[in-house]
Image 1 (tube, helix red, strand yellow):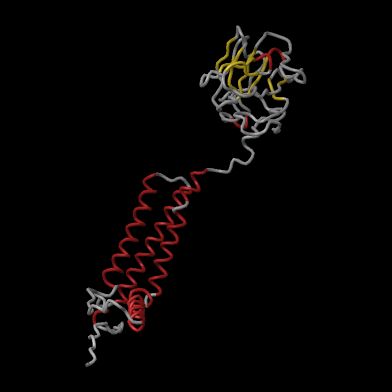
Image 2 (cartoon, one colour; image 1 turned 90 degrees about the vertical axis):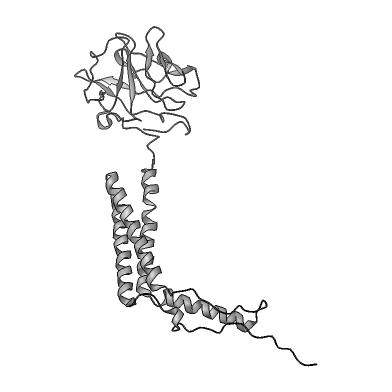
Length: 310
């Protein structure tokens, strides 16, 4: 019985210098420099986009720099892929279905050889690709980081009201005790935060004269019939801006929380969980209304614990 030998159809390792490994470019070095330069231009535009986003530049600048960065990055990849990657198609005899150890080693070596031609021999070009991609990866985080805005820190626990702050309108006009009639409501701010969302305060003149005591310990907080409360509702942060003089109640129009003005702005109806913080007032020698201090507790919705200081 004679031995039967199957033909060995496995391919032999092809040298990187073989014809099928030749690239399309007649002058590969020159093309490599062109691709590297194009990567560098894309890197510059990505840098430009990051800087423009950081300073909140116009949309035209943002779109132009980002678009140009992608354009040049894509062009560099096309140049590299078309002119510097070995040409195909690559043909080889079909191997046996059952591979031997030698065939496995040849396949790995062949794969490494081809990769060495496409990438390994072009260190500078690879470095430019990595640099451009790295810059874009970092810059791509800018919208996320900047959109988050500054850290709130303790801004929700404090406002800009301080001892001696003048009671001012949004246009910066300081109010005197003679400026408001009984039953009048005004939205006021400290001079260093005109229009501030957290500092907005409602100033109400509930009576013509005499101090208004809303609760024990606040005997001097409502001079000459004036009371001041945070305008930020303790339910959802809506502005509490409606005042009913007859019942002396403040109403939040968002969810109809109702607060008793002469009783420390305690909520008597609606979803508000706690009273509006009260701002202590005094009238100075020139008749101007001023703050004795800041709020003695955090303002707004009560996700924090009470007892913070301003």
